[in-house]
Amino acid sequence: MNNRVYNFSAGPSMLPESVLLQAQKEMLNYGDSGMSVMEMSHRSKIYESIIYGAEDLIRELMNIPDDYYVFFLQGGASTQFSMIPMNLMNKNNKADFVVTGQWAKKAYQEASRYGAARKVASSEDKIFNYIPKLSADMFDPEADYVHITFNNTIYGTRYKAVPDTGKVPLVADLSSMILSEPVDVSKFGLVYAGAQKNMGPAGVTLVVVKKDFVGNAMDFTPTMLKYETHIKDRSMYNTPPTYAIYICKLVFEWLKNLGGIEAMKKINEEKAAILYNYLDSSDMFKGTVVPEDRSLMNVPFITDSEDLNSNFIKQATEKGFVNLKGHRTVGGMRASIYNAMPTEGVKALVDFMKDFEIKNK
View 1 (cartoon, rainbow, N blue to C red):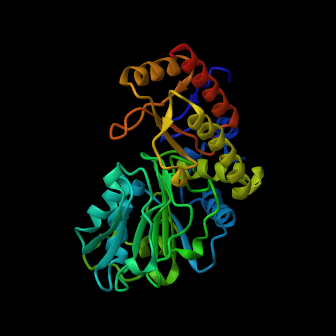
View 2 (view 1 turned 180 degrees about the horizontal axis):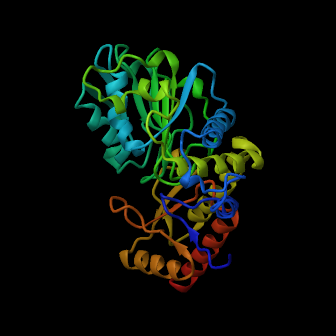
């Protein structure tokens, strides 16, 4: 497999090689079924063992309490920007938002269509390079929920601690950090995540919601956008993204065998430290995020020259370090170092950066 590149894409991102090899092995015949998972009826006993096995594993890995529902949906995390207000902004028709990036902003804008969405704090004044300081008294006690984006894929920031929202339920988009470090689910009313960064391929979204937080969707909410619809049929109201869920299950098994999320966090901290320590010592490259709010998953960095940025990306690609181009709103580069990125990949990237710096002084 020596023709594999180091893929630093923000998503869809790289998957563990052992997972891909397992899927390859089972492509034509899963178990003794005589067929591919892609060909199975989602109503069959053998597929039920896959989807319910995936649910059991994610409950175990994330230590999800029994009073939470867990289900798999289509539509990506972006569909949750609508589903959440339609299902949860249903008592006082108000919700508070902390805007720390493009996805947090989109969640806020979408919720504004369904009720009184209020922007409590924002880091847009500095191109989202920090997490605003928050306290419980900043939130409206009558808000139906507070929404945050826990890790910001584009700008490379993350919450180091769960904010105190008083008695207002907290909702969080975990898309680009789920399974990378422990999160106390009991502190949230609902968490959700698109799969294509740390869980599996694009096409499936995980939702975890407290049982007493659902059941009162707005009257006009389409059947497919009601949480109760999917809770009642355990993710099987319609045909779920069967193969994507199967790959997620393989990833969950890989993570469990690695030692779980605590073990993964240690690896991720080591990977991030290798890259950040170099950025902090480099004369050419510098990180764009305030150090106290740096993400473990997404590391944006720049030089002081657009030409240098372009040359670096071109030469890196030629050397097998791909998808390093930063988002247009930040510029420069971004290395996404999700769970499946091996430590060797980060070390190799830093070695290349050091070499590039020496040759371009």
